[in-house]
Image 1 (cartoon, rainbow, N blue to C red):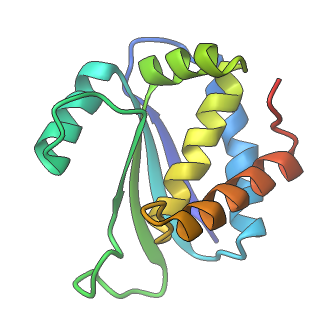
Image 2 (cartoon, one colour):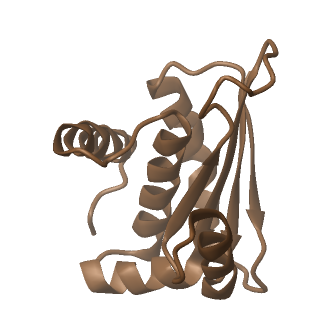
Length: 149
């Protein structure tokens, strides 16, 4: 059984977070994942800026940061996988939804799947890796019914 928690660390009631539960259940099934645990934490720009500077050495806000616990061989081995945490900036999600001309729901869902794939070891540093990762995240979103509104 998979387990994840969606934690809203902002002072706002975010209606769009309700869409994440079904999407994450679908994505985990689509990816054939069993017995994984992870968190999605919604924060503001100030907090994601702090995290980005402290842990990545980048002095600016970003949209999503994933802290994968399986990045090396030092993670604790159990009968389930503790994947890590995904931090999403609500402020940046709003900005990007407006910039790309789609809904906040679509942007939050996109960032959640993007972060989940990072927890699983996907990256977009090389062109072929980027194509693989972005293609997979778009397939998951489209097959679940999250389209570019």
